[in-house]
Length: 78
Image (cartoon, rainbow, N blue to C red; front, side, top):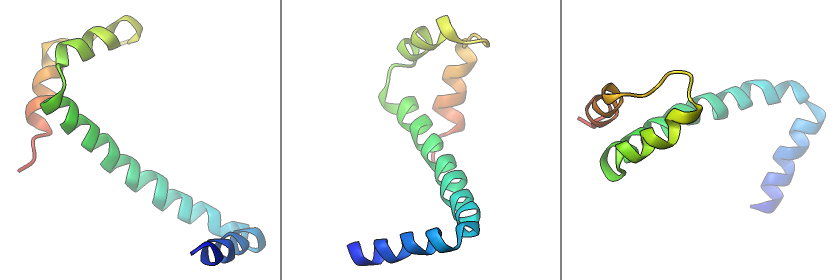
């Protein structure tokens, strides 16, 4: 496994144009799933009032009761 990782790393050393498409695929698609999973976990397993109280002092848009509804019901798995 280490040898395979080394060979893949060498590919990026000699062909740096491969970094952009692979970086886009890894960063953008995984980030969407991670954020959705965090929203679902926050909606079901965490006290949303505590989360709002923590986020509101430094937020530009103050989170209200609509946030609880959005996180709890809009992200509910089918």
